[in-house]
Length: 187
Image (cartoon, rainbow, N blue to C red; front, side):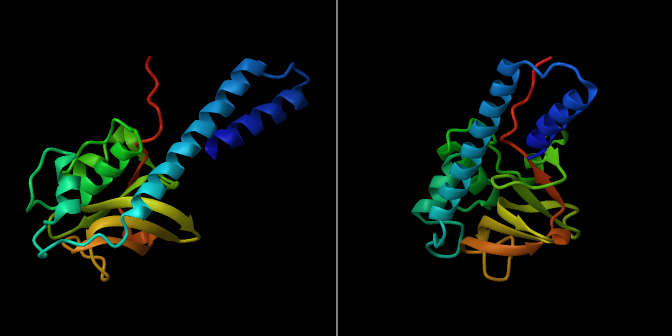
């Protein structure tokens, strides 16, 4: 959305200043990039939503689906898996990154964003642990609320849950958002 606003702003400035319009090829490339990113975001959300209802087999971070999520980051059963779920979904959507299970590592500075879009990663900070200790995916935002798709949680929103759930979280409860879809530009 920010890119669309930027393009519209450039068109307005160009029209007001009497200069010629931006290069059509550049504009078409930007529109193609926005469409591609939007398609990736939709694919990530759809894949995560298909996993709703997955539950651990015995409540010990196990079961066929949970172990598939963990395998995506080379971990075996028994490990916390919210970050593995995020990485597994991105992998199924054809994205090379992230491949991280340690939730604080899902939020490197270059990936942080203030406004969340569908498919972005969110992190919840736990003061007792002094770190982000739970992560999931943004399905959509509405006003001050974020609808999420997350693994290793439960109906109460625990970080040590029993399955994949859709949660409604207030933005104030979310510590960070990270955009792993945005392409990094090489200098």
